[in-house]
Amino acid sequence: MERKFTGVDYYEIDELLTEEEKLIRDTVRQFVGDQVIPIIATCFEEEQFPSHLISELAQLGLLGAWMQGYGCAGLGPVAYGLVLQELERGDSGLRSFVSVQSSLAMYAIWAFGAEEQRDRWLPAMAKGEKLGCFGLTEPDFGSNPGGLATRAQKKPDHYLLNGNKMWITSGSIADVAVVWAKEEGKIAGFLVEKGDPGFSTTLQKAKWSLRASITSELHFADCRIPLDRRLPKANGLMAALACLDQARYGIAWGALGAAMACYEEALNYSKTRIQFDKPIAAFQLTQEKLADMLTEITKGQLLAYRLGRIKEKREPRPQQISLAKRNNVAMALEVARAAREILGASGITHEYCAGRHMANLESVKTYEGTHEIHTLILGEDITGLAAFK
Image (cartoon, rainbow, N blue to C red):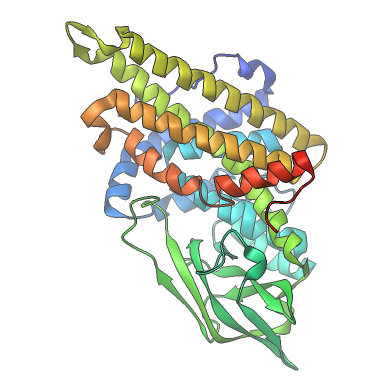
């Protein structure tokens, strides 16, 4: 059974949170401790997503939690960030599922869809009755989504989609896929439903990262969809990137949860692991690792918190989101690696979480914009010179 998790709060950030925000965080924290921690190592080992938790996530109001109306909880940005922090403390795969459902699929329909599309999908997705995925990345186009090869051809009474998407979270279980394709050379968004003719999925297996997450390929071979499946406001690449900004915001918070889990595990282990007649926590090199871990987590908390408060007032600049995602994921990965070192050989076993988080964070550092891409986004913003072209 998990030792009761009390969080990492060296700079007393709890004092900056509202009572509602703390209650929401603590509720999800207990859910993760009771329902996720006891099973997640087995799920990771067996490469199984804990799909039985979807209904409980919905009952807690965690699907589309940021959204007002449509049966959603209407949480503020900081509260929503704290939700994702606690979920990723359990596992990046669980946070990824909620992020894709909420910040990508539901957000795309909410921001760029017609009211009829919102009414059809959003209440059911909030209840977990319908699942969504987000089809942007392709086998040959990841960091350069503007070059995507999937095409949508408009016919008198339908669209024909042709192409492939790759590395799609929840792709094989989704009832609706938000698919980005070029229509007459311009990027547009479409809703493709499970069972549409010409649409199929392939489950991507044999992963050593995000093993407790469903990752799929989407295939469109003359996939025929009605004309009203186009997202009417999704015109151009900026629409797709706006969705990614929502997900990146959540990742900046989620990475904190993984880092906290690793730090707490390493701290507790170091106090009980005896070498040379004393706990390894008494050695200077171990204390240096722990001090560095705590410092970087605290800095990441302040970044995420401030970004959340900005988001309450106005939508942050994409570059501000890039800074937080870039810093916090890289930080969490280094914390996981340091925790694994403190754990020694025990750190590579499923009995401890550090190795699992370390493997997951390798993927989190890559998706929703690689570390290098966010570096270039910030570099262009600082200098006014684009390195992409």
